Image (cartoon, rainbow over all chains, first blue to last red; front, side, top):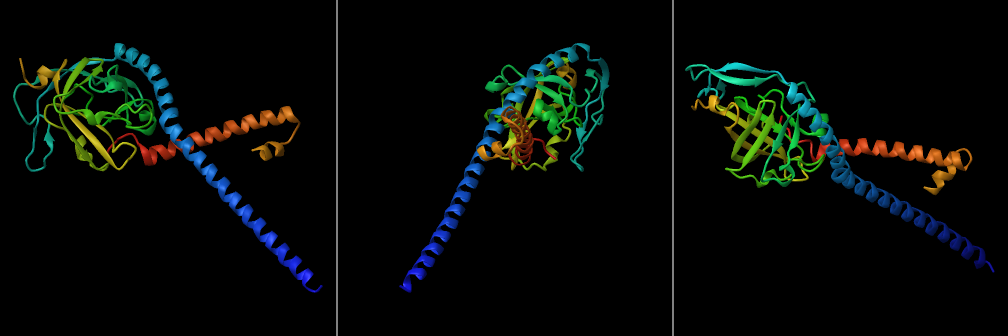
Length: 254
Length: 49
């Protein structure tokens, strides 16, 4: 008779602790389900929502670019080539001497302004072209590929740098790794179409700003994230101008 | 979800409107959070410097 209350208390305590355990398991289970849903949401957002936003922007940017290029102010400027100083490794403008050459130049666009179209016949998503905007702020790169404002415009002497997303926001530079020396890149601006030929591709750290340094002649440097789905490194494509409104004057050819 | 919906104040039609507004706010917050997460860790746009 004396054992009955003790057994009841033990049973009640066991029921309470098993109830607590069940609640904890349920809470952990729901937490994991929600974390899984949030992660799936993140993947869907990065792959599809950002691309949808970017492609919707491209339509507007394209019309804006055509309008801008029709009204862009084009001037003639004198140009004397430079050579790289052996001591500093930097390009010294005008140091090559010789007769000045006449180049066509367009006014620098304002930040965020779409002003160019980049086409790469070998890259599927760039065969029709992708609009390039002025600036490499996050907001600029969400709409199109971005031209680094501290570098010359495409088609001008020096090293024009264009950056673009590799996996999100339309991923315009997703397949840049297929480019090899000899492949062509076309950039259309208010001056006309500038054709570049890929000379080199390599991987650098995100802090390697030397890839944007001025180069003798006229070059185009494309930068994007590497490897795919990571911001750890940068894939760099360097291409040299071979054809376009300024190619002959820049290289002193007749 | 059901518990949150039941906890919303007002009659059923009002609660439905409140739920839609709440969902929209959550989606907008998630969009900005995911954008920040993506451009910080996954693909900042390929810039150097």
